[in-house]
Amino acid sequence: MKKTMFIAISATILLTGCGSAAPSSDATVSEYHASMTVEQASDNALSAQNDNNSEEIDIDLTQLDSNMVYAQVFDMVNNSDNYLGKTVKAKGPFSYFQETDGREFYAVLISDATACCSQGIEFVLDGNFSYPDDYPSIGTNITVVGKFNYYEEEGYTYCQLIEADMEVDTALS
Image (cartoon, rainbow, N blue to C red; front, side):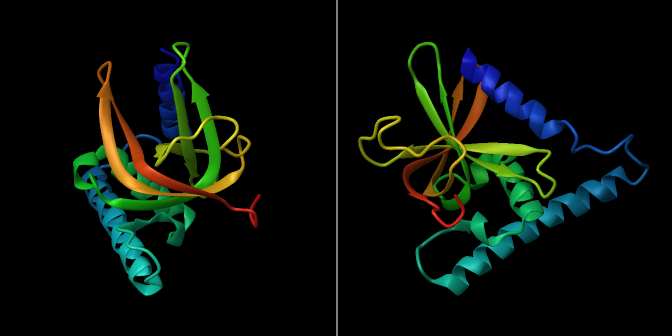
Protein backbone atom coordinates (compact mmCIF):
# COMPACT_ATOMS: atom_id res chain seq x y z
CA MET A 1 0.00 0.00 0.00
CA LYS A 2 2.79 2.43 0.88
CA LYS A 3 4.50 1.59 -2.40
CA THR A 4 1.32 2.63 -4.16
CA MET A 5 1.33 5.83 -2.10
CA PHE A 6 5.04 6.38 -2.90
CA ILE A 7 4.34 5.92 -6.61
CA ALA A 8 1.25 8.14 -6.42
CA ILE A 9 3.28 10.88 -4.76
CA SER A 10 6.01 10.46 -7.39
CA ALA A 11 3.37 10.66 -10.14
CA THR A 12 1.91 13.77 -8.53
CA ILE A 13 5.35 15.37 -8.41
CA LEU A 14 5.87 14.30 -12.00
CA LEU A 15 2.66 15.93 -13.16
CA THR A 16 2.55 18.97 -10.88
CA GLY A 17 4.25 22.11 -12.08
CA CYS A 18 5.41 20.62 -15.36
CA GLY A 19 2.27 21.03 -17.43
CA SER A 20 1.31 24.00 -19.47
CA ALA A 21 -1.93 25.94 -19.28
CA ALA A 22 -4.80 24.93 -21.55
CA PRO A 23 -3.68 23.08 -24.68
CA SER A 24 -3.40 25.24 -27.77
CA SER A 25 -4.92 24.51 -31.15
CA ASP A 26 -1.48 23.22 -32.11
CA ALA A 27 -1.63 20.41 -29.53
CA THR A 28 -0.99 17.74 -32.17
CA VAL A 29 2.05 19.62 -33.45
CA SER A 30 3.30 20.03 -29.86
CA GLU A 31 2.84 16.31 -29.19
CA TYR A 32 4.78 15.56 -32.38
CA HIS A 33 7.62 17.86 -31.33
CA ALA A 34 7.63 16.30 -27.83
CA SER A 35 8.00 12.81 -29.31
CA MET A 36 10.78 14.05 -31.59
CA THR A 37 12.56 15.42 -28.54
CA VAL A 38 12.41 12.03 -26.81
CA GLU A 39 13.69 10.32 -29.96
CA GLN A 40 16.52 12.85 -30.11
CA ALA A 41 17.27 12.13 -26.44
CA SER A 42 17.53 8.41 -27.24
CA ASP A 43 19.80 9.12 -30.19
CA ASN A 44 21.96 11.45 -28.09
CA ALA A 45 22.22 8.92 -25.28
CA LEU A 46 23.19 6.18 -27.71
CA SER A 47 25.75 8.28 -29.63
CA ALA A 48 27.30 9.57 -26.40
CA GLN A 49 27.80 5.97 -25.31
CA ASN A 50 29.36 5.04 -28.62
CA ASP A 51 31.83 7.91 -28.11
CA ASN A 52 32.73 6.62 -24.63
CA ASN A 53 33.20 2.95 -25.59
CA SER A 54 33.72 2.16 -21.89
CA GLU A 55 30.84 -0.19 -21.16
CA GLU A 56 28.17 -1.76 -23.30
CA ILE A 57 25.33 0.57 -22.35
CA ASP A 58 22.29 0.97 -24.55
CA ILE A 59 21.01 4.16 -22.93
CA ASP A 60 23.38 6.44 -21.03
CA LEU A 61 21.27 8.97 -19.20
CA THR A 62 24.39 10.48 -17.64
CA GLN A 63 25.35 12.05 -20.99
CA LEU A 64 22.12 14.04 -21.40
CA ASP A 65 21.24 17.46 -20.04
CA SER A 66 18.56 17.57 -17.35
CA ASN A 67 15.67 18.32 -19.74
CA MET A 68 16.61 15.54 -22.14
CA VAL A 69 17.23 12.96 -19.42
CA TYR A 70 13.84 13.74 -17.88
CA ALA A 71 12.16 13.37 -21.30
CA GLN A 72 14.00 10.08 -21.88
CA VAL A 73 12.95 8.67 -18.49
CA PHE A 74 9.38 9.79 -19.08
CA ASP A 75 9.41 7.86 -22.38
CA MET A 76 10.93 4.81 -20.69
CA VAL A 77 8.12 4.81 -18.12
CA ASN A 78 5.37 5.30 -20.70
CA ASN A 79 6.75 3.02 -23.45
CA SER A 80 8.38 0.31 -21.34
CA ASP A 81 8.22 -2.42 -23.98
CA ASN A 82 10.64 -0.42 -26.17
CA TYR A 83 13.33 -0.57 -23.47
CA LEU A 84 12.91 -4.08 -22.02
CA GLY A 85 16.31 -5.72 -21.53
CA LYS A 86 18.35 -2.67 -22.55
CA THR A 87 21.27 -1.68 -20.33
CA VAL A 88 20.68 1.74 -18.80
CA LYS A 89 23.06 4.02 -16.90
CA ALA A 90 21.59 6.70 -14.63
CA LYS A 91 22.81 9.04 -11.92
CA GLY A 92 21.08 11.04 -9.23
CA PRO A 93 20.22 11.00 -5.53
CA PHE A 94 19.67 7.63 -3.81
CA SER A 95 16.17 6.96 -2.46
CA TYR A 96 14.87 4.17 -0.23
CA PHE A 97 11.37 3.04 0.73
CA GLN A 98 10.11 0.16 2.88
CA GLU A 99 6.58 -1.29 2.69
CA THR A 100 4.70 -2.27 5.86
CA ASP A 101 5.15 -5.91 4.81
CA GLY A 102 8.94 -5.48 4.94
CA ARG A 103 9.64 -5.27 1.19
CA GLU A 104 12.31 -2.72 0.36
CA PHE A 105 12.68 -0.56 -2.73
CA TYR A 106 15.73 1.40 -3.89
CA ALA A 107 15.73 4.11 -6.56
CA VAL A 108 17.86 6.69 -8.30
CA LEU A 109 15.95 9.98 -8.69
CA ILE A 110 16.01 11.93 -11.95
CA SER A 111 14.97 15.62 -11.92
CA ASP A 112 14.19 18.08 -14.69
CA ALA A 113 16.16 21.30 -15.20
CA THR A 114 14.16 23.30 -12.66
CA ALA A 115 14.07 20.41 -10.17
CA CYS A 116 10.30 20.84 -9.89
CA CYS A 117 9.62 17.36 -11.22
CA SER A 118 11.38 14.12 -10.48
CA GLN A 119 11.04 10.52 -11.56
CA GLY A 120 12.53 7.62 -9.66
CA ILE A 121 13.95 4.55 -11.36
CA GLU A 122 13.84 1.57 -9.01
CA PHE A 123 16.89 -0.68 -9.09
CA VAL A 124 17.77 -4.15 -7.78
CA LEU A 125 21.46 -4.73 -7.14
CA ASP A 126 23.07 -7.87 -8.54
CA GLY A 127 24.06 -9.86 -5.46
CA ASN A 128 23.10 -10.15 -1.81
CA PHE A 129 22.97 -6.70 -0.20
CA SER A 130 21.18 -5.33 2.84
CA TYR A 131 20.01 -1.87 3.80
CA PRO A 132 21.48 0.21 5.38
CA ASP A 133 24.84 -1.62 5.55
CA ASP A 134 25.48 -1.87 1.79
CA TYR A 135 23.78 1.34 0.63
CA PRO A 136 24.63 5.04 0.92
CA SER A 137 22.65 7.56 2.92
CA ILE A 138 19.39 8.75 1.37
CA GLY A 139 20.09 11.69 -0.92
CA THR A 140 23.66 10.63 -1.71
CA ASN A 141 24.44 10.91 -5.43
CA ILE A 142 24.90 7.54 -7.10
CA THR A 143 25.39 6.05 -10.56
CA VAL A 144 23.48 2.88 -11.39
CA VAL A 145 23.86 0.56 -14.39
CA GLY A 146 21.32 -2.22 -14.93
CA LYS A 147 18.97 -3.95 -17.35
CA PHE A 148 15.63 -2.25 -17.87
CA ASN A 149 12.64 -4.27 -16.69
CA TYR A 150 9.10 -3.61 -15.59
CA TYR A 151 6.47 -5.47 -13.62
CA GLU A 152 2.82 -5.10 -12.68
CA GLU A 153 1.47 -5.09 -9.18
CA GLU A 154 -2.10 -4.32 -8.08
CA GLY A 155 -2.94 -2.85 -11.49
CA TYR A 156 0.11 -0.55 -11.66
CA THR A 157 3.20 -0.89 -13.83
CA TYR A 158 6.58 -0.28 -12.19
CA CYS A 159 9.91 0.19 -13.98
CA GLN A 160 13.20 -1.02 -12.58
CA LEU A 161 16.83 -1.72 -13.42
CA ILE A 162 17.71 -5.33 -12.55
CA GLU A 163 21.09 -7.02 -12.16
CA ALA A 164 22.29 -3.52 -11.31
CA ASP A 165 25.65 -2.19 -10.16
CA MET A 166 25.80 0.96 -8.05
CA GLU A 167 28.65 3.40 -7.43
CA VAL A 168 28.60 6.26 -4.97
CA ASP A 169 29.57 9.49 -6.74
CA THR A 170 32.04 10.84 -4.20
CA ALA A 171 32.77 13.92 -6.33
CA LEU A 172 29.09 14.89 -6.26
CA SER A 173 28.22 13.90 -2.69
